[in-house]
Image (cartoon, rainbow, N blue to C red; front, top):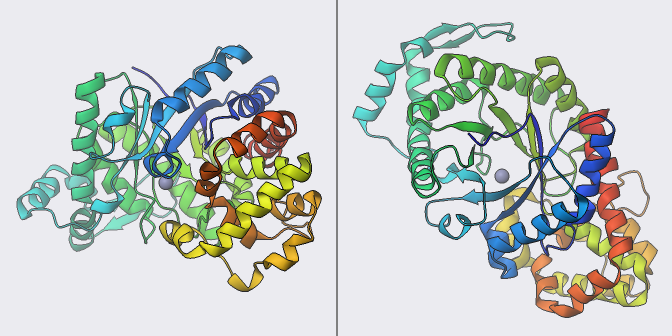
Length: 416
Ligand SMILES: [Zn+2]
């Protein structure tokens, strides 16, 4: 069986130019004694916006792997696929994030609910899960409510999983199920029921992405109650370990945190909880590598700075349509976005400082950062004007890509 290692890290690379710089961060961590397996992820939505094909992700990663002499495993993730979007990923992916968030809340048949409840008497009443101090109590009503909410999603995950298994062969791919793109977080109790239902579907589940409490906006820090997150995360780890034993799920099953990148305030919490539970972790970051491209271009000179300003100007004009698909994962305060007259005077350093995610820097502006983060299709429209500059300034961009991944993400998450 193709097994996902204990620690894995999903990176995005929207324009497929930064795999080498990204890999350098993995190599650095490895040299410090921690093995993290790279996974390149790109969703159908990103491919559609840019006009790229899934095969390009694998090609770019493959080249970087060969050039760097990386001999450990690596994967390409068909990120957030569904039955209607999975096909074009089949040839080039070995990791599938099966997204069933849209099926949450759909009404299962009464027969399916009854069958589940009959097959799972162990979920009813007082449940003792190793590591969770207070026992979990699920009344008949509470259990039936959870089953009603999530059973169709689990069945849908089974359908998609079997479809992929039919095409690629069972054991030849890594399966993740994601339920994060929804309005309400899943409690540890709900996660337990979901795992039982996914095991019933005979999914060789290696990683699961629940929605955690708090806000995981793209490219900026976590917003929420840190103590509550810590408790929930620790309990989720215990629930996973319990479900592996109880339901025969793969023993490397781990949590996948669809972080949206840059969740500085919860990285230490995650690191400590994972170490304490001796658990694994898959952390998925958003395509913020593209912001490092903008930062590097800003620092590269006048031409790069002008391009960044052009993209920002168009982003301001088209802010409605650009932000609409991401409404649930960004929070932009319009009044904090500088107008064109203001940014006309900005030099490259000012742009870099505005965009680089160093919250304590006086020039950092999370609103500009978030707006540009979702504006990558404007760069795609620039065509070779954009990609030629990426090539010309690959050194300074690569340095930013590396530093961002290594210093601001991997170190606090894996090294402390
Ligand atoms: Zn996600």
